[in-house]
Length: 127
Image (cartoon, rainbow, N blue to C red):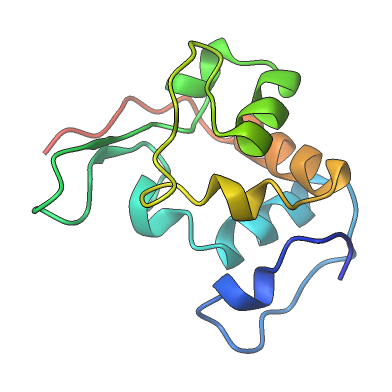
């Protein structure tokens, strides 16, 4: 394990093949996939309606075409470590596992940031 992020506890794949650990786009893609971010943020990570219809919440678009477009790398690090967005909104730990993600090393967070920034600018999904 590269840092402290408990990816084994989150992964739905019991044997994920990880690229070399480091602050790389490839490792960031691995972390985003193994943490199953797509289960809430959608297949293309463009957010939209919360996947559980009994929850009236909108899931943020985490592509460069969405909410993260206004964030810089330090904003991302701070939000993942504190649960507070740059706009001062508190993330709900029942819907966004920021406490677990906040255990990541700076290199792991940078890898995730690099991957998210590499995605196409996608409009937020509407249902």
